[in-house]
Length: 104
Image (cartoon, rainbow, N blue to C red; front, top):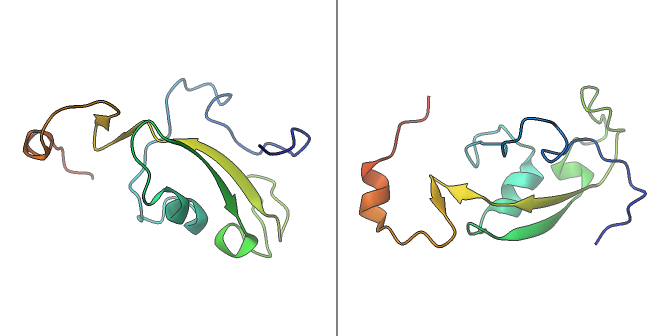
């Protein structure tokens, strides 16, 4: 576990939405370090991801998130679902695919 004295720039636990963040892996919606860190996760898994600056916000940082340049990032992520499949789901791939809604 990481030291508790590190600054927290964002957290879905405290953001107030009450919902996990939803995105398409590899779409460019997340910084590259997150895409790489989540690649082989399974629903229900919790993982800590150490993201070097080159895979995060680089030397310039992020004005929006107030992250200084050159900052390494440490994320704790719980994968809730993949394409609506959750941990313990016993449906077949065909059943899941038949209910898929196109991402727009």
